[in-house]
Image (cartoon, rainbow, N blue to C red):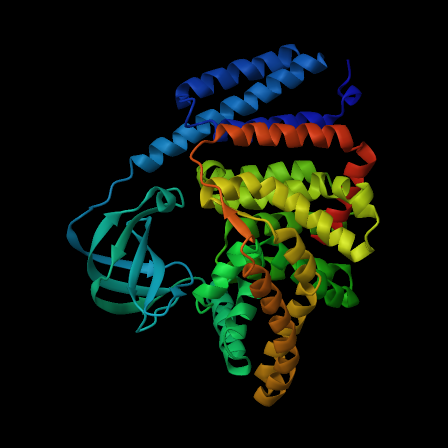
Length: 483
């Protein structure tokens, strides 16, 4: 039988999905790397034997992906756990800062590379250190907690003594991106008052350094933290606006310019999982459009997930940002069009219907993760998101205009800043108003995880029952056009 009977893409999807599943299950099924290699060779032999039997071929290729995923996770896990550093002893440390430092009211936090490993340093706010600085100091390396360990950070040094800057290094392009980020925030602070300057920086860069705790609490209660958590949404908005401008200079300029913008934005934001995912997807979609090729978003999504897991096999199980990012995207692709076709939703005006369906689809998919990790369920989230999401793209575009004007002439930036203040004020007023409602959110703390499996199975059944192929294709088309 020929593969065309079920479509060659099904084999690719089956392999990639099984590969990710194997990495996810790796800590539950400890498959030795040597055994994994042996099983993989056997499965490849079976693929050759059953290459004309479509069902058996699909089963074997899925098993091959699963075995490779299990073997790779256990290889990665053993390698990470066998890395040794000198813990709980005061030693002399010298290393280069490898990320953009996070500054808070009285402290700064950054990562350095020491003995080819990542170490997090927490020290005073001043003097300020920057990406590329080579520092020498004395301190005690404390073993990192599970969260940091699964991010590849093996230890933490708190309040090191006698910090001396011994030189500078690092990638010049990275340094330029971080310099632009710092200048961006500095200009916002000059043209806008607080908390609006910090909120504006959060919308574009995900920076939360000066946002008041009370306002952060309001975002949490109303389920709108995502607007200041840098994500693929931020990148999508940037690509849409700048892509329109670059399109005036031709397809090649738009393509290469978009790739440069994507890469620069990923670096400026600190490269969280959500932005890396969106950056890779956006780059691949841009390449597909440039080459005039059809885009299979399911394959792209699985491919990007596996690329990220290749660099950090822990992400699928232990990185909340990774989980939220991919689940939200899955909801957007596969269920937003289904929700948009519900009778009550279809009666709504176009922009409200689009906002509501996309918001609900994403939030339904991430709901189990939010409840499991944070123990909070926002009741008012759908309504608040409808009221504010429609203005977010215009607000982000205006923030860029404010910064550009402020760099040219500060009074001009302040003039545009007044209009920006109106937009930002509207969003904050809506969030604060709904947050004051006594029933805005409820705590639902639980340590059990089995109910999440049932939840996602039910969602899957609903998608299969109500999601026709035409609706799925339309959703894929809509999403690919937005990225």
